[in-house]
Amino acid sequence: MAGVRTRLLQLTLPLVRSHGFTRHALAQSVLALPAPHPEPLSDTAVSALFGEGDEARRTLIEAWLDEGRKQMRHAPSRSIKDVLAARLRYNESVVDLLPEAFATLVTPEGIPFVDPRPALSHAAKVADEACNVVNDQSVGPSWYARRTSIAAIYTAAGNYTN
Image: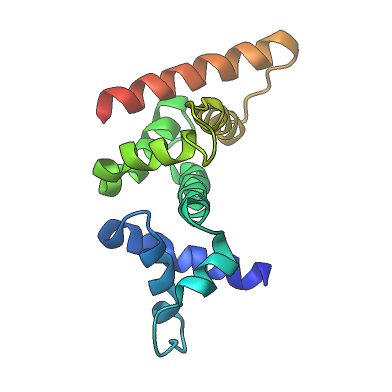
């Protein structure tokens, strides 16, 4: 089941541009299979594969963020500037959808406050991937300082470009 879920998430990513980070986009993913399904997934199937309610949307948003980190490896050079720019470019086609997507991530169901952990985790993962792409050899306190500063730069650049 995990393989099917992963494949459908990959097929959903291009649909985000037209359908947003929605359960509907996830339902439409089966229509892009090599042997297409005759109709979109039912809401029950979307819930079974990706989670109930907004959990399915969070699953799709996380898949989008994961793919964006993978795309960093295709930067034109191995400079931090180019790697972070590649990550920001990945979001350009859906930039108008991102505020709602990030709001969905930071306001889990049943919690009456904003949870900053998803945003901090995302920035930390981007910084770590950027350091891996440029083959950063920092160790000890320098390792943390490098990633913290890159996470802050990425977050500031993302807020500035959005």
